[in-house]
Length: 111
Length: 114
Image (cartoon, rainbow over all chains, first blue to last red; front, side):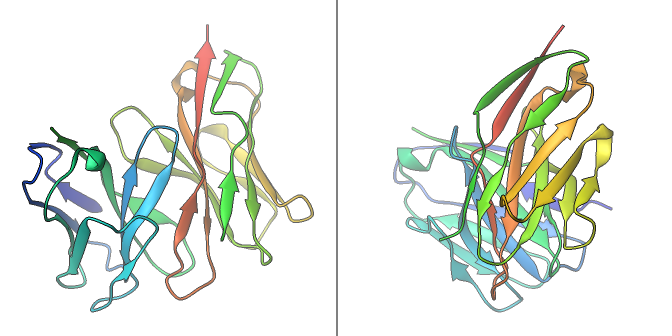
């Protein structure tokens, strides 16, 4: 059982470049999330999808877009990367009223 | 807005000593509460969870936490620290709304000294 799988694990972008972070879960969860983790700030929610076909902004959505492709997959796109988007990105999924399961993270550096 | 506070960004204990990591939340309705652990360069792993059953919750690796509604707290404890407990610990709440989003505390880095 793979759980939550994120690709890629590492990425270096130049300012202004675009990229898509991929996330897939095999636990049949309805809800999926994208977080970014920065030192001393915990995890901050970028976007979430409560169910297939819906997406909503979280705490820090600016500069990002998402697509809930199907129940399994939830991608995060950076259209024009900025150095402030250097971070570790985590995808997570969950059922109602219980814990979230996390992927291993994508370490993104924007130079 | 909901918030989670964790007192102490860095806690150091000696091997064999008591571990106490503090978590307080702001909510008018008791939320679901969680503690996660993160080892270097890894994702978050669930330690334990409170979902309105017993107020004293036991988790993996000998950790436990007690939900105290009157104090809006969910502190994490372990009677005897082990070197392998060195990691970052996050407290989180899950909200009772449409998205049921999770709100995370800033984290506490635990160091275990030999």
